[in-house]
Image (tube, rainbow, N blue to C red; front, side):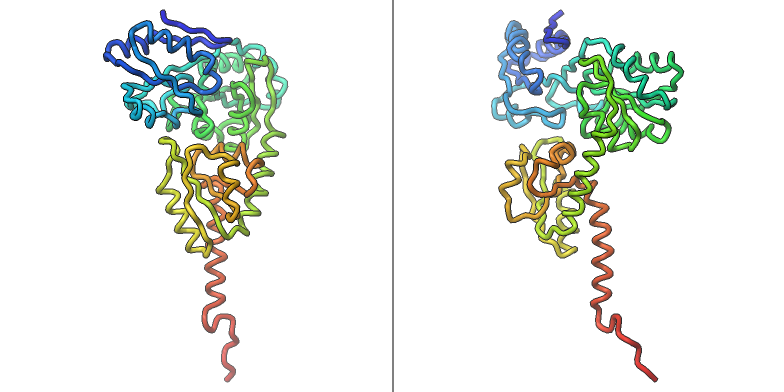
Length: 348
């Protein structure tokens, strides 16, 4: 067994090393999210012991949407070994091998703590981030023992496991939202729980194995809602709008950006398309002539960073209802400006 340990994480490299050796790969590119970079030397060394040349990517990595294909080609590597995330879908067959990482901390204490927040709810949706997806079945059994009815959404889109949620894909929660009273989300921190509550508008409790405690998300989610409403109001007055196109392979939505560009032009606004690999407030704030931004890349850029950008920023799905309203107002304005509109009929 080729296993590496780091804190509460266990990484089994055995299948990956076997596959790399079988395919006779000579050079591989290792890609880590920031939180797993302390493992970089240990993981690289395991592969080097088997005669494989290894290069480690130091660029930021946010998920399976952010595979280092450019570096793969530039460095003439045979394969990307991507740690910490699941494949982007079940049938992925690209030049990347995914090594998922599981947190070995018990979730029992956090589940016990969650009961005081779930007392008035009976039907509970259960979801987890990839590091804790193995805890979903235990959580369901726990809830059943305490008189609850757990429900788990089926894998679809970018979720390869039942109950799996990602920052950009909450389908497993959305598909069962109409059937549950509340959700319990097993994850470290509030990131995934906030996403579920914003998407489903159902109460969410996060069970955090690292803290051994649970926390309701309500007040945190409300802060995000207020920020979004403020951005929506400012967007209504925006004349010059930057449409952001992500250059990461799994976030590129050029077609959607072009549709938004045409809609804004038809509304008499002045849009411009902007592309970036790293979409940060520092990058975007330098476009001082613009009044607002529409983000077509990772939705969490706008959701989590809304208060950091100097100009209002909305995701494409958030701005479309606003454009629908502006379309109606624009059509009414054109009718009102038509020759003879609003004039009194001739008197006999």
